[in-house]
Every structure is written in structure tokens, then in C-alpha cells.
Length: 409
Ligand SMILES: *Cc1c(COP(=O)(O)O)cnc(C)c1O
Image 1: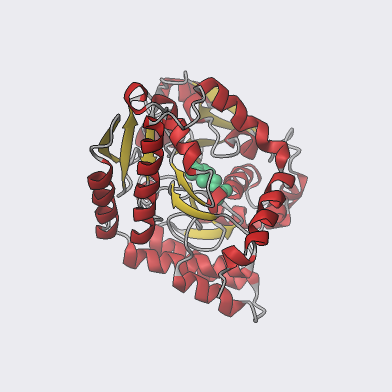
Image 2: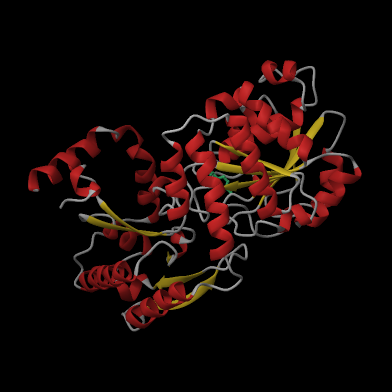
């Protein structure tokens, strides 16, 4: 019996990269999947279903209310819009024209990053204008307070490994300065496990991904102050219409939150620990590779395996290893957070025990080949340029591969 990957001629992907939208995010939680499938054959009042979701989001986050949107990026856009429009439908319909309303969003320079798309654009497509403050690696509360003025609609704060990790204003102080000036704070925590922290600290709107660690269908969750969540929901009559969540996403987010409550813990899960030790035991001792365990940047209960490559001994760079792992019929994706510093990170949260063995075997195989000088070496500069050139290859290159695979089976 050929599975769906074979029937469509797709590459078999082992995901040692984490919660990646571009790799299909997560294995859908069984409860979330069952609810999504069950609701397909029913009609519902979407507003009623969103009210059910609001209750589930409140329970999970401690917020007054919540709503499900198309994805985390749309959660950001709709939250920024909500802070500009309030409950005024006329203004909801007027966006992205913002000349006659408060339209500025204060934001630290170190938080203006890309998560696969630039957060700047996700904010600006609403018609909002970003007022940046601080330097890339240092921001202070007086700078935030100086950036706030008569036109400030909101301030935006991101918690993510994507942001600059040094010298930023901590969330508590950021919120205090904004609230003294009656400015609502939007926190994007799309990939963070802490569902209650930012609300407890006073954040006005908080965005989580429904499809990353929560393992629901594609969706975004916005939790927060009731009037602002109502305004987020109202965006479905405005720019939010182009990013809407359907009944299946809304109901699966409810299921995903319930399952997460059972699943989540402050400690790294045992099965993830087991895979990390398996990798450490198997990859330690390879020539030119140092093995270590790395605690997640932003404090999630998550550890990853670090492979530090010494290119003089290993005869390849970290990025050469990563590229080799993506060349075969079974491909392994790793985290590239520190790749240019000769570091490969293996994330255990979406890898089965069976797949962990394949990953260790493939890494050992590439490193053995490299010692015999049969792995192509490319400089970081060349690799970085090449990674931007593939954009126009879709779909021809992919269809070619698919038809090659289908011919084989
Ligand atoms: C993944 C991510 C996003 C985008 O999430 P989508 O749900 O794929 O739109 C936004 N912000 C942060 C911090 C993320 O990690």
C-alpha cells in the first residue's frame, strides 16, 4: 500500500528543524484532526464557533477573550488593524487608508526581522506606519517613551529566536511604559510554549500559532483584552477577509488547546531527551565534530543537539553537511540558526525514534565521505547567494523531481 507521499511523488522529509511552516508545521494532534474532520459535514454559525474558541482560548491563556485567525502572520495584521479601528466598522472598511486615525506602531529595531516573511510588511499592509526606536542591539525604555506620540495606535513586541537576543527591553518594562501612556501592546509569540506569561504581564493582544507546537490545522490564535479581541474579529469584514480561518481551523484550534493542556509540561519530554541522548551517543567521536546540548533561546521546554563542525578536520563546512542531507530521496532538515558559525542544530520534537536513527546514519555517512574529500565544498558567500536564486525555479524543478520519482515506482 503506497502512502500519500509516494502516491504524489513527494520527497520523504525527516524534520529535525522544529516547527516550520514551510515543512508542514507539525503532525496534527489526533483530537484536533478528528474535530476538523467531523465539522466538515456540518454548517455552523461561524460567530458561534468563534465564541466557543474564545472560551477555550481564555481558559488556556487567562485572557478575557480570544479568536482564531488564518495564521500567526494574519494575527499580527489583524491585531495592528484592531488597535487602529476599535469597533468602528467604517474605519474597518477604510483600511489601509489611515490618514485620519492613529496609525503608528512603535517597535524596537532589533524586532524588525523576517520569520520567512518580513514582519514590517505584515504590519504595514494594514496601512500602519512603523516608528522604530533603539539600535539593533540596544534599546531603552526612554527611547520607547520618546517614540510614542499622538498618533501611536499600538506598540509591537516579538518573542522569538528570530529577534536580536541582546540588549532589548524586557517585556515587563515595555508594557509598563506603554500602559503609562495608554498604548496597547501586541505580543507576537507564535512559536512560544508559554500560553499564560504575557497575559499575566499585561499584554493587550498576544498571538500564537495554532499549527506549530499546538499541532492544530493551519491557524493563528489571538488572545487578549475583550474590546480589542472583538475588534480583531471585526476585521473579518475588512482586510481580515483575505486571511480568514474556516470552521475546520477554528474547531481544530480548540481541540489543539485542550490536547496541549494534557501534553505540555515545564520539563523537556522524556522521548525528546531519549532522542537527544541517542544522537549525542552516536555522533560524539566523529572526527571534527563537537557535540553538545543547547537549551532553547527563548526558554521553551525544549533542548536541541548542537553539532559544532571544525572544517579543517572534518573537511567540510556545516552548511555543506546540511546541503548533503537535503540531496537524497529521503531528506533531513536541520535548524540553520547558527549555520554560518559552523553549527548545525538538531531538533528532536518532530522526529520519531526510527527517524532519529536515519538522521544519525545519514550524518555519519556524509562526514565519512567528507574525510575522503568527496563532498563538494562551497563557501558561505556562495551558498548564501545560491539560496536566493532558487525562487524562480518553482514549479518546473519540482515537477521534474516528482516525475522522476513517479517513474521509479
Ligand atoms: C512562525 C512565526 C510567525 C508566522 O507564523 P504563521 O502562522 O506561519 O503565519 C510569526 N511570528 C513568529 C515569531 C513566528 O515564529
